[in-house]
Length: 382
Image 1 (cartoon, helix red, strand yellow):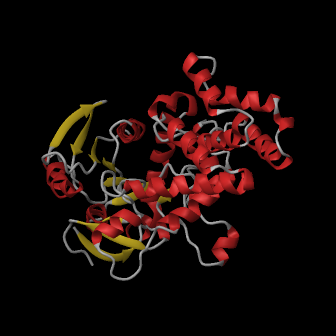
Image 2: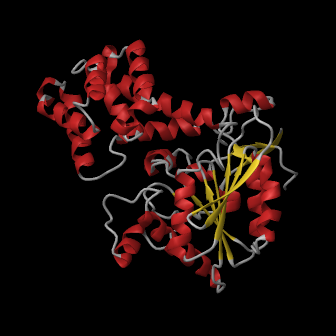
């Protein structure tokens, strides 16, 4: 493992990025609302990454991105680099169908406790290249070429950002999780003030974040932060909530939201106003209704990028810093030099990825433009 110095995702992707709201960072590309209207897609709620309508929007964006700056080559191949077989694999197969393209996806995760292994699988008529080392991206390109992929202007390459390009799964993803947890804690503590109980918060968060409760929370960190806040206010207890979920009395987060709505007068005024805002946003179909939490997540995330400064060793950086995956960076730079179209996508909310105007004035930048160190086992790349 080697430190390749400071870099940013924008050095190889530019502004060819969409975060959760599907609003392209490159303002030359069409806005999500315009694409949705053209395709007959409901703009609310915004499609999620694993949904077919998300793929339809992305296929449209890829074609527009290919045509920028006078590009005339038609996309003939789709390459996808991600970290989860279910979510990224589904997004990949949907995108192949939406674009009418053959494709191959690299799904990576560092698993040092296992011997190096590659599994090639077929799902939905498309190929998944499943690897337990990020370094195996070096072998992925020769494999793709054997299948006829050219890696020139006829190839579009999707790079998943979270826990792939940034904070590689199995190697550095725990720092992304730590930033999110700190943001939840900060938000709940700021809102509860002296009533905040660290032990109670940790018990609520750790339990409700377990897979067992994902059907209830929809694995949505906004919902989880809200639950921790309401439990911290003593309107409901953790034992009562968990008991009702396990007994089947509560199946969905929205059911709990309605219970709180019925007792909202018992909340302090500031929490009552916040609940009303979140309640209305959830009912309107917003997937990220807890804005204060996501703004804090942006700050706790960028605070872990590019630091520690100086000559910290590799172990310390992997433990404390959200780093760029050098193996992905190296391949991306090579593919771009060969003429392929690169595009990044993230399921991280825009509020957790793009600074507010006051922060912009202080010099903050979007996640993909924020510098951090590139670490990995890839070859040298200038």
